[in-house]
Image (cartoon, helix red, strand yellow):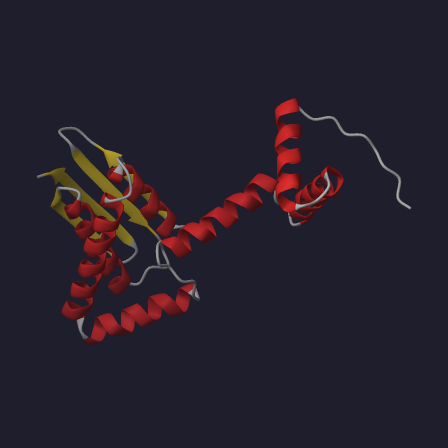
Length: 188
């Protein structure tokens, strides 16, 4: 039989654990042990429990946004191949998708600009992505990723422009080169 140790917790946390245990049909002892086991498991993977939960949240968010995971290099090469075969058709597809993503985030609460900006930050994980608000309701969107192909860079810029157009912004300047996107927008 294993020995037990007493652990102290703030009263509100202990009450929440008790409610959770009751909801799951477990004892408080079982619930606390399960929580500690998962926290230690995360630590053994080099993560804090918060980081592990945040990763899970990001996976759920990606799924909610209709994203799928694939091999990054393969993805860029497939886009590049399609781009080289029919540049205009691919740009039209990405523009349409940007439009629908803009509509999706327009309906996601009362801060569509922030929600869309956060989503794009998430979509560009591994890139240097920034949305800066300039003077006179101007936005500067920049994204740098050395892995982006020329074709992917161009279609992703089209996607970004279309998504922000739905929020009432028009493009005043677009400087796009392989792996580098800088778009200046202003309120229409």
